[in-house]
Length: 115
Length: 111
Image (cartoon, rainbow over all chains, first blue to last red; front, side, top):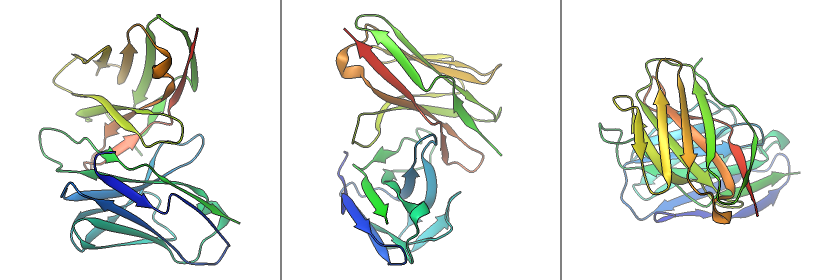
């Protein structure tokens, strides 16, 4: 998984509780992304980061926040989890958005269940 | 908005046959395309990519074809093996430089 780890790998939480998912990379890549994956949908971008403390929203950012205080770590927080946030969450990294490639490398995923 | 879609949610293929997985996109200005393979319980793995200045690109047992006229791309897997059983999905670079992904096609390889 290209030097990407996600923690926890599985989590069950109750509605209304805060949850933080962590993505850690050892590749020193500049760009990091959080996606969610649901049946019948492609990967949908939640938030992404283009550098330390530089983040921006994706297409499904409502209810999520992120932080990146170090190059290697990108945190995704659900301030108050809802059942609609039950999903599999993937972190991805990319070295650049340059002319050569937009290839992204994905982590193993976190399966989150909100009861 | 921009969209990316796959034609078939499931594809059943006999071992040894060739597989063809299709993807359609809406943005005629898209200039970068990518295919991923996702095995059950794992994260997506890069297979192959192609830029819009090419019509065809080959990798190891895989070929990606791009038809910009009809905004369609396909992934061909030669001599499909049991280890090829997975979900395959395409990604298309959107106007903001981010990838938009299709929902995926489940490839089932039968003996």
